[in-house]
Length: 97
Image 1 (cartoon, rainbow, N blue to C red):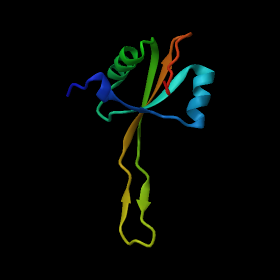
Image 2 (cartoon, rainbow, N blue to C red):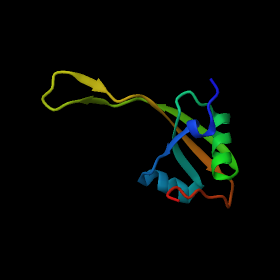
Image 3 (cartoon, rainbow, N blue to C red):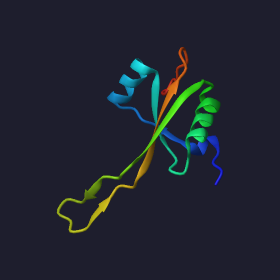
């Protein structure tokens, strides 16, 4: 299945840890499509944000178990995929822009 650049990147992950990574190693965290691979993620980031990507690291995240208060039935959040993208020196991504 061929994904377009807009389908590969779902959303940026904005947490304290992701901000620390931006400052220390110029890396950004994204929630990506579960079927995407590293070359697709690299191409999508380079095309959308016009930056040079040095390295892409991916991981599959398990959904957390959830239950409703006082409910018998239990469920889980869906599984998802996360990607850390390291950019070349001098390149930056304006997440809120």
